[in-house]
Amino acid sequence: MKKVYRAAFVVFSGVEELDLAGAWEALATTQHFSKETYFLNQTVSVKSAIVKCAHGLTIKADKLLIDLSKYDVITVPGGPGVSNIVKNKSLLLEIKEAYQVGKMVCSVCTGAFLLAEAGLLKGKKATTFHTELNKLSGYGAVPVKERVVVEGNIITGAGVAASIDVGLKIVEILLGKETAAKVAERIEYST
Image 1 (cartoon, rainbow, N blue to C red):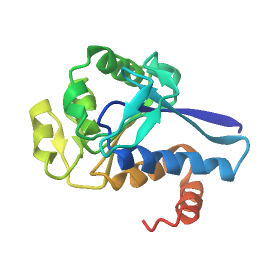
Image 2: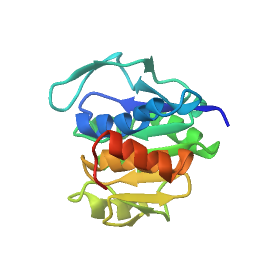
Image 3: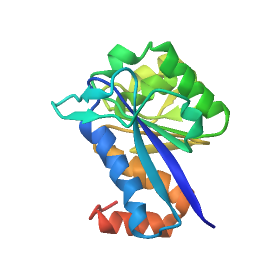
């Protein structure tokens, strides 16, 4: 079956570089295995096309925040900038609407707090950066100390390096274990 999965990576000032790049790499690597079924990634910026990341990397976003529900997968990385956008009503509404129409909504690290603020984690198991894990219970979530937690069409990942694990889990769910294993081998990642 031919299927190009459209993946949106939400970016904002202060986003953690590896939170973004690890999952991005795992999804993008699928293009090496099939010209018919793979992920097509785009960065979607909350406010500005030019985004300064947490450790100084500057990126130019592909799109400004519009209709996340047109993507198949939405990934929200974390980083120190989360504290500035966690109350951005437009972003929270976009995340919630994408979830409500059945899209896969994922987070890495403290990006989980955007999913929580949007009301998506209430009553669900979830994970985030280890020092922030217990704060998830304040949103009605059930904190779990694991690298990746899957609850229906929501995936949450622990801290920074778990970004690759989140990406591989997305690949596994949508393209199968065999493709996820090929991606892990190609990027030389031991799971």
